[in-house]
Length: 412
Ligand SMILES: [Zn+2]
Image (tube, rainbow, N blue to C red):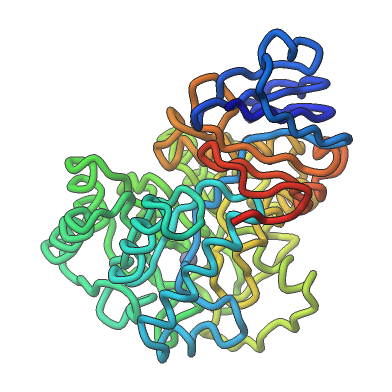
């Protein structure tokens, strides 16, 4: 049977102008037609189930490129992931997947979870055992001994060890490699301002990953780590915070390196909604000292805007699972892109769909509403071009052709 979504408008995710009175015809899990309500009788035919959302906008499902499915998203996220059993962490991951799907995330990439949790969760979703987005996983991140996220990472120090760790993750089924180029705020006794790996080691990982047909993403706060990632051709930079090596300064932005990112076509997941989410939820900022990661949100948004203007491609990742960053918080990312960074709503929507699908290598399958692609579509209540915040209100969700939410009620 055909499933048909109709609404006041349709945004296909390619960047094209919204279509008034849009309709999406879904058959056998795929998009059979992207059309309009007035042409529907001819396209849909009898025996179709039609779901009309007055006032709504049909658009591609969201793509969240940065989750940690076994992290609790609570104040004690670090304690939970370092003390709880794998069984409890697996149950957290199951509930996280449902939460993400119910917020309109139809594709998700996990960037760091224990192997024994990440791979079975991916399989359980594929086999229909549990509900969840289409899931791409990195498994454990690759880090230095005692380095960022060593608690659930593979520790590898030398070039040889790093290459071996890449091969191990691919052997287990990794869709993407995650490396830790600098220390991180989540992991005590690491240094956010200093590099964990020289550029040559990152380059060796990129080279071997490319040989095996996967891409590499790397966490980088300190400018030295950002620079190393760009030099090594890491496909997807995470955070790209430009943290200064000098603890008396917050940032040390290098526009020339941003130009290189654009030239090389590297994708950046700036995890830019983090501070905003804490503020929005009324969470007091944590006390900082000279060693911790500091932030200056207005300056950060200015830097990100400059990177954008230089042509750097942005993808949408929240770092879900970290303290107070929940699995159903996706819409904060495009909201902050529009309200704080100052890009257009349509640009933020394209980052959330098409560009992120390109970064993940799944653009042939999803990321835009085009005939033949998997039916990953949502309907939001209102017009996101007028008010980006309506992305928080997803009334209807179809994931891989299956209706999973209707009238704001989750069916899975
Ligand atoms: Zn992360």
